[in-house]
Image (tube, rainbow, N blue to C red):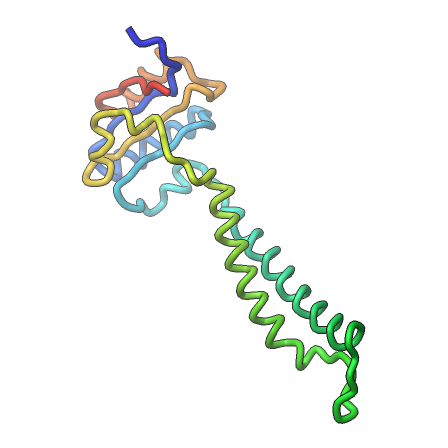
Amino acid sequence: MSQEKKYGLIAEFETPGAVMHAAEKVRDEGFKHWDVITPFPVHGMDQAMGLNRSRVPLFTLVGGAIGFFGGMLMIWYMNAYDYPIVVGGKPMFSPMYAFPVSYELTILLAAFGTIIGMFLLNRLPMHYHPAMKHEAVARASDDRFYIIIESTDPRFEVKTATTMLKEIGGQNVTQLED
């Protein structure tokens, strides 16, 4: 008998509609630590799971702002402070000629911010997930849908969660080992 720590419960569903309704029921039951595995994006699943808007755009905004203002500061420092040269009576600093560099740095650092934000918020790279031990979860890349309720959830209790998953149409409800 295995003495491994239990990760949670996994239940199988056959259709996108079934997993969508099941996700709504799990959300309504008050579970916080759970996930849905689908072979393709299911329209409306974010709302069914009660997920908020992603925070990745904030990382993009911060990266872009750092790029723009960093570019402007770099041009000002080099042209007006570090090595000032008067050329044709033009000012030492003008945002007009600093704009191309700042624009390119805005795009570059916004892209880096997006990638870094996505990796941080998705806790990547994650090379292992306990669902990989489940023998049938490979079908999630083809034609099956799964709901996983983690044992770290405050409302998690094996017997009641198993009963609830079976009542909402879950098949093959089994425990996942960590």
